[in-house]
Image 1 (cartoon, one colour):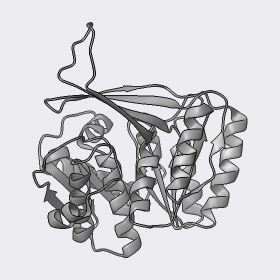
Image 2: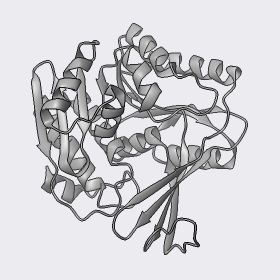
Image 3: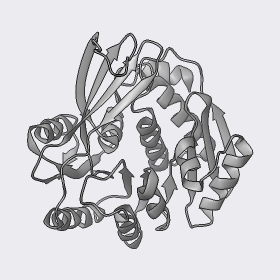
Image 4: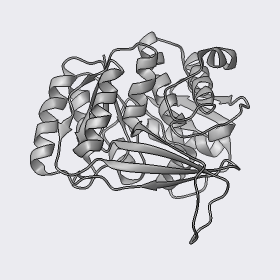
Length: 300
């Protein structure tokens, strides 16, 4: 069983418009909402492929109720910690030229009691899973080293962890040696504090992460493709050109693919190929987790 942890879920709202005008009235052509947050997106993709998934995290208010019901309808087990306040809404403003502006709400404040309840749930789930996905940002009240705490616990139980985060959450989490980490290029550059303009520079920094005890580093490079680095070497797969509808959730799709390859025992090159193909196929859809399978297989 795969456990997905979404500490800061959201209702994702995709708004399409011709062009975004700052400081002026903007009229939308369409607006579509669905349950989101990085771990929720991973859950949706995994369930499309019929893998057993348990989803946990913090949910509050009517938005939280909607997300929980939607995840249950996917066939995933849900053990969310319910909190005061309202789960956030993330708004993606998508222009005709493909540019995306994200407006992200902070989410509800998490109390010490909420954290204690979550930790009891998390430990119980560790006893029944073989892979944990930790992805996304923290709501207010969650300490910046919380992913590190969760990774250390999983390591103690012999459970592999996949970390997909940014900023201080990523930096602190890396110190606990997750099994696999999937930053994008910008997140890796922010982590090391310098530009990484070449494949060689990216590979060098990925290898430094391996020295921390991490087993696999996968760097997503958007439309360019993906870099996969482990102790056996480095591998790059270019992305095939597709007709892009939305890039929202493509990184989460890649994480889900890497998890499925881990469960299936794929070799590193096949795991990389699948992740690039699946995330590219996702880019041709609105939202995340409605992968057109024929296109995916063609790209693969």
